Image 1 (spheres, rainbow, N blue to C red):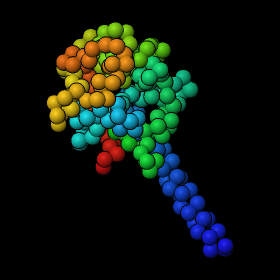
Image 2 (cartoon, helix red, strand yellow):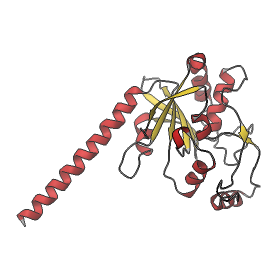
Image 3 (tube, one colour):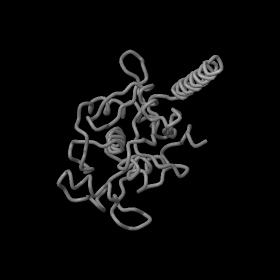
Amino acid sequence: MRLKSLIILICLSAISVSSCANVERRRDIARSIKPGDLLFRDSNCGPLCDAIGKVTTGYDGANLSHVGIAAKDVNGQMIVLEAVSKGVVATDLQIFLKRGSDSNNQPKIMVGRLRQPYQRLIPAAIKEAEAMKGKSYDKAYIIDNDAYYCSELIYEIFRRANGGKPVFMLEPMTFKDPETGQTMPAWQEYFAKLGIDIPEGMPGINPSGISRSPAITIVYSFKN
């Protein structure tokens, strides 16, 4: 009985040490993030996130399914302005990092920093993102409908900050499996529920594409 109790205590101690290490790692990442940094995440939200990541390969071969922009709130606390299912919101940075952790509670985050020629756009881009809080999530993935999906938000705020000239480029969207050339089942089900046609070939943008943009440098990657 004593041996069993000792084993349990050791296990609990190991879990506690691991948990503390993960918390400290998130804090280290958070301390390195600056306002204007783009935060990419390999989300674990099931088949749809897998489908988003699969259609375009991100920086260093990563399958990225979400992106937001770092900023500071009125109290000086770091937040992430992002478009999620409930719309454009501000999320505490630590919550964002924790939400993007893997099965071992390690953050699966990439941090992209605007290169020097684009640094001047950051204050205006953040101001645009703040003004768009409360806008609806763009479930249809259509540009110019006053609703925004995650990478569309980033595209639009920097386009506006740059006097209408895009910093990140739109490309024809595809919802097809690159291995089979067929529309992925997750996308078929998704658009069927919305009752709309799949916008195959229409202009769009995704997190993986932004992560490879020449306008940014990846300064931190969970893959390294």
